[in-house]
Length: 131
Image (cartoon, rainbow, N blue to C red; front, side, top):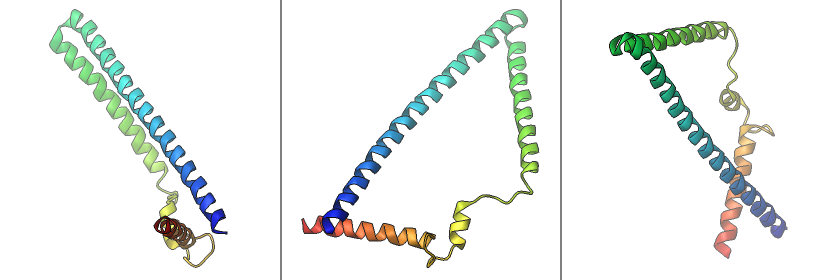
């Protein structure tokens, strides 16, 4: 029976390791994509500034670009405020609050998950010490 538990634990550990590796690679690629997107956005803003500066001068172009960003910030803040007012009446979906209120003795509750994890962890440690 212990061989079965050991094989299941090893399979689960291998799956977790592979999953963590995939997640790390995906997160790195998303981070690189975000960095290059911000660089492209910076060049676009610089190009807009240069195009305006050729017509009206550098100081006026700076105020025009800053005004455009200020306008966008105000629009996004207004949308966020409207959205938060709309969501005030709804109950928050906080899974941790639900887990804290759950009965630890009830099957499937947070206590059962913690007990299962602790049991598996202890079994894994005891198998390593015997080897």
